[in-house]
Length: 383
Image (cartoon, rainbow, N blue to C red; front, side):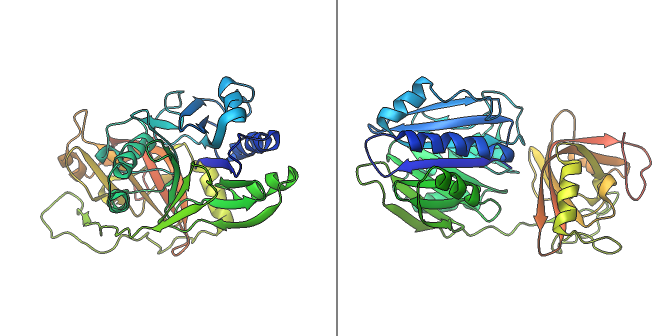
């Protein structure tokens, strides 16, 4: 989980001191959504932009009073901020958001993808997403291109970007990540936490006129030209492909595959309340867990295997859950290895999502590996 904040003054004459203060405070308050890295996009009246980012939390991020901050005060038309919670890719200045593509497109992303290697061979999933969104927005029929691109995304996303060629800010999200847009007397404000943004506006004397959570699958575009208060909204018809799933029987014999929908195992397990989910997430986030390879569902081939375990993560066997992730077929790992009954998958928990309909935990893995443990129990454990 990461956080995004931003401000677009209605005036074209730079930022007021109050508007700069609001941005500092939003970026600082948003640290609870991510404290691994912080970054800023600053957009100028002439269509140029600058970025600043570092692998540090917002408390220690040195932005106020920097050359970019001073330029924004005189010539700025918008500021976009990001607080990173590490998921895919090590924590470094290079891997902090924003990501810049072709020196004309800068984007921040809240979410985790499970198939970013299909888009680009990058260390961070968000950078791969920036590359393909930029490519889509370069098309004359960018709506269709963006619909086609986002339909291929497997994972959670809320993306905010500045497109220098169009001189506009773009914003889009799916159902797994929030984004709120608020209008005050003097500014358009946005953020992952709507009430936090509203509170900061009020404490700085900027009266709230209206606010909304932006609809899912709707492209919001904010022109940075004169008269930039107008917002263009474009509904995206994103037709998600239905995944073909193959559940291989233990031992990998030739029994016809079971293609039933993937659902968590509920028999003999406790449904998760929201409060219990919060405790569970805190106990396993960024930690290593293991699960049975025979529960893994193969949904992709080639240079990696992606799948879902609907039961068996060893230290949460008693609750309803499912685990998914991607394992590269490298370093000697072959698909045939998945058919061995004594193999266990291990990985780091990158995200934990609450599934309301099944009252279960959806656990997203990274840095997965295949380990031989000899004999495994019904609920495996590996030390």
